[in-house]
Image 1 (cartoon, one colour):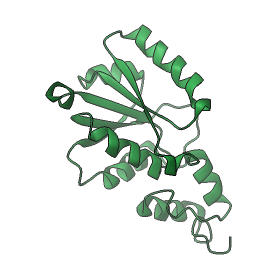
Image 2 (cartoon, helix red, strand yellow):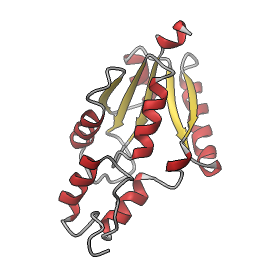
Image 3 (cartoon, rainbow, N blue to C red):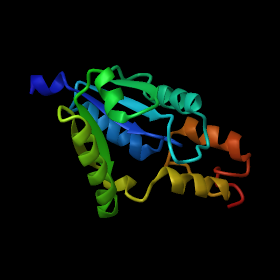
Image 4 (tube, rainbow, N blue to C red):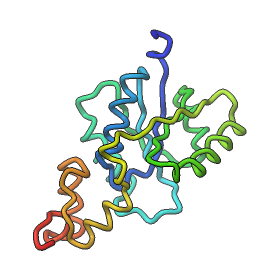
Length: 172
């Protein structure tokens, strides 16, 4: 078990926004791996609500009291970033079977690019199966209540972005 504790896992994503599902997965992974790096992706085909710096700052605030968790932004190929951090595991969350095909393809491509890096999948906690960053953004944008789906300070940041009537549940 000690050899596993020295292992560094990189959990990549856009985290736009960081949800309670992400937080749960990181905390559970930190019990398995010695260090979990939350790697906030700057390169993405998605149009983010928050800038890379904002997403990094939000995640840093969430994990500020957990010495096992580091938060960093990155750009470029994930395997290159993982190697630069002297990590050997890419951590991915799985909510449902629908996630599997995409995640499987990515894991195989990363394995092709660097055979020394393993991808480890962790199932999401059942409480967060229905949560995704995309859904949370849509709910908040249209005035729905996102309390309990994201950490409170993330909800506050989303309220700032969408306006006070959105994301609070008020008027929804």
